[in-house]
Image 1 (tube, rainbow, N blue to C red):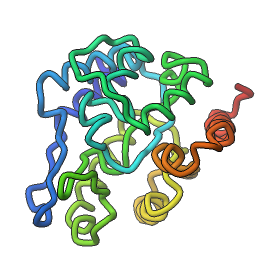
Image 2: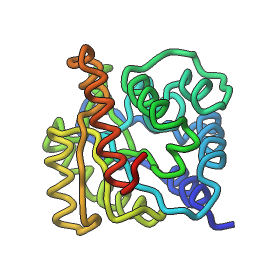
Image 3: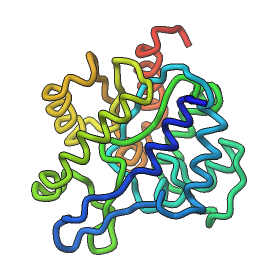
Length: 228
């Protein structure tokens, strides 16, 4: 049956990093692991087994301790278990971006209500490390140049999953600048809104978390055009 979840499963199964990465940069490809892919499918089937359009929410690229572990964007093993109701075998470690996003999802009304409206992914759906640390697709002009065809292709595929013509970006700095240039070139979305990245909030603005939760609520509600 052709559902949003079926299309998303196919998308993740097809993800393969380009082979010409710059020296010292390694790709994170969790969906090539059968166990990770099993949990990704479970998540997608639980929340996306329909043909409703979603708003695409785009982070930067996967990190080591969130979706690289679980296969689900911004979802660490604890959130996958406690917030999404999917017990798992992964090391139950916490990841900062996941903690913030699921705090927001809880204020929204929980995972089931949130994922009925939004599909969370990344501008670059494959992550990177360099010298053992997370590395963003825009951190190195050479990396970005080599990844751009892949990014363009995967963005177009994500649009084809069945999303609205407005997108939300998680990241108001380089991620926003780079994506707006891409969107101007490709014409993927009529409107793009941005909020601060969860990791930035947790690392630098933790004392003002409630203000950022309110901002997220305002932006996500505005996109839906509801009074939620």
